[in-house]
Amino acid sequence: MATDDTTTARGGRRAFARVLVPFLTALALLLLPFPGGPGAGTADAVSVCRGRPARTIAFSTGELRLYRTRQYVCAVTVAKGPAGRRTMSVSLQPRGGRPAVRTGRFDRQAGPLTVHALHRCVRASGAVAGKGTSTGWILC
Image (cartoon, rainbow, N blue to C red; front, side, top):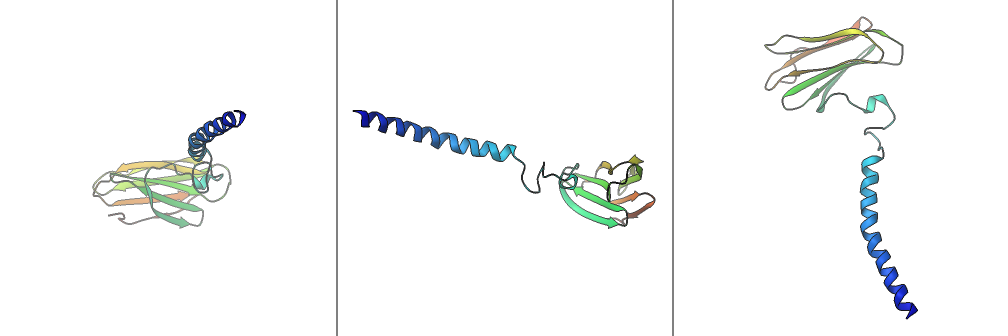
């Protein structure tokens, strides 16, 4: 009889493990950081804009990053290296609309700046410490 009790106990543990292990695995995948995702350890890995990366334009003191969803375009200017507070700006203008501008003294980035651009081209510019870049009409 002792063997029947142990067999029943083992079967119950195995059934419990079949349910618990996939649940814990899924929970761990949701909560633990993964390479390239949120919590990857670098500020560059995490985006402050929604949407997919559309364009990155590098210049001597930083880069202008553009992201796009179906209806919106988002822009952020990111400085190269930690050099303390400095003057930074980001500008985004949908064709036929007014430009949205964010200027000031920032540590790492200026923005995010989002405009409605469904079926519209946009013009973007970004600057860090007086040096920057601008685009023509893009993302049409």
